[in-house]
Amino acid sequence: MTRKLVVGNWKMNLDARASAALAREICTKITPEIKTEVWLTPSFTALTSVAAELQGTAVRYGAQNVHWEDKGAYTGEISAPMLKELGCTFVIVGHSERRTLFGDTTETVAKRAAAAFRHQLNVVFCVGETLEQRNNGQTNQVLEQQLNPLISLLQDHQLDLLTIAYEPVWAIGTGVIASAEQISEAHQAIHRYITKHFAKWTGRVLYGGSVAPDNFAEIVALNGVGGGLPGGASLKSQSFVELVQIASEV
Ligand code: PEP
Image 1 (tube, rainbow, N blue to C red):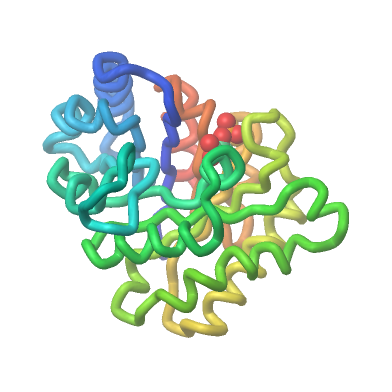
Image 2 (cartoon, rainbow, N blue to C red):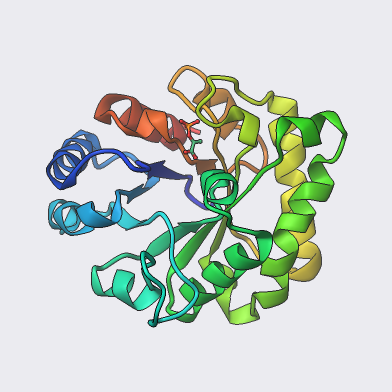
């Protein structure tokens, strides 16, 4: 059975020193019997200090975004080779904050993912509907629209690098959590849609959106849920490691 995966999204929080301290605390609290895979995403400026703390541990680190070109006149962007040079093994792409606040589209998100794949970086590809789309009964359609450009770019030999995160926009940072039924339905729809195009895909679909120690046990035990992508709860070692422990016990 595939191990559960918990990816901490630290967003634009914690400077390099505070990130290193959090990484250190997390590592000391993760005991050897914990089976969960743990990935951390500090800000770009904290990657090096976090890397130093994670050396020799099983905890991996990655970035919160990546550009689709390897280099060039793209002020403010960062490329896959630059992230590889810092030892990143994965990137998050398509987080709803990137889509809503920074103009990422389904096409640019897929291009970012393609660049990561080209450089052998794992991708946590985020999808999710707004409340309005859910209320209009468009959830599956939106998920398919968000996945389509990815599916057109994805190649068979890259399948192992793909993880999906289902994050309903209305549940991110709001304290409102999707119901077990909503999560199950969306996760099954995502699995169905990807395997319709790539029958061999066995990747994980994570849930994200106000995940916390008091709600995660039910979520991570659901069929089709491969783990979680916590934001707020990943910023404290205690709550984050509790999530990791919960995922290990499923
Ligand atoms: C996220 O950042 O992807 C997220 C789900 O945040 P939170 O857990 O704070 O809702």
